Image (cartoon, rainbow, N blue to C red; front, top):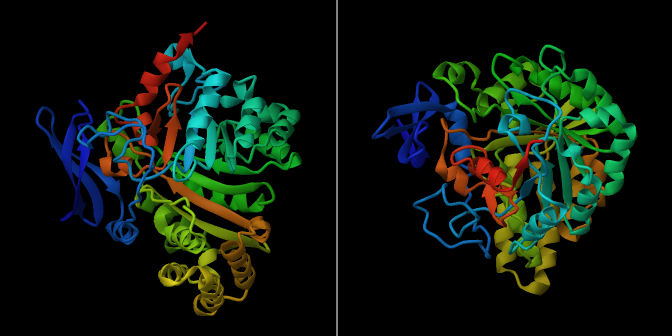
Length: 486
């Protein structure tokens, strides 16, 4: 059954092809035919019913008002630089600080030893990339993540973090394997003192069978705890290798909620050469992750507790209608990821859905936004205040924590006082997942909606799934600005 049409790539020659997203036996596949290499059909989502639920959150954005280039969309994704056809702004920017690494993981996107050269932009080049991100209109990029390679190998890392914070980035993040943090408690403290918001720690499991650096990870977490530096765990999930530990990873995070702020699962992407056997054996899709989390947590966290990224757009639209100022809109593609918040109370995990009716909340916020749009400037505040007061009684599910959450959220929406929301958030654990594409499940519509962009030394912004797969701009950028390996 045909679900929708899109464009994709030939996984062999990477020619742009017309493609169809189809349902077969309750699963969703992306099909296309290359005139030179024949027909290809690869798994897109494991659950067609879940695909349809997420499809209802299809919300397209307007992109940036100052695109880097103006072009038609016939050559997408091979002619990147954030263009007039791109539908989302930069919500999270990635900057590769180096391709040097002190590990050699077989599933890594890249490392210097494999490349045969060093990629390491200068401090001034990093500064220029940060300036580019903050110049986006109508809303500057709010968050930047420094990655690699292993960014902790940069001697000027603390100065780079401090620079980003001084330039107005609300979130400054570091993607790391944690080896140096585990070895040096002072390193963790310097990260926090430099202004780092969050350490994104590569953490593949809670046993030595799934996580060869578990001892280092536990030591890194302890050092970050002492420094009061927040952590998000980032497990790369490969079917048959560590997908049996999803529930244990969630529980581990909940048990360490004083320092761990979230878990961001990343289903494996086949960015290198892969056989059909490899893909069939190791591919795991978002619905499969959700099924395993539900069963492995014994339904403490359920599949229906998760929502796609664009679900929060009604909140942005409400704030924009209320304040008259442009807001960030999370218009990522509805099938890129899924997320929820859970609260840890007396060692129990309580999803936000148990406290309030999330679907009813988004519907109510939509209606309130429509009322604000027709209200005059003077009456707008009263309409918003009264609407927020009425909302809670209609969407509450439980008094346990729900009222506290709603009071904090109401203050944030009306007064922009986020202090109480931050305090309440300290008991909340983010659980999310983002399935980055590869040449086998490549959907160009997803690329045009991408909200995670790489900044490069030549002054361009490139969507994540063009940088690391498809055209693979990473290799072009790194080679252009490379140094000899020695």
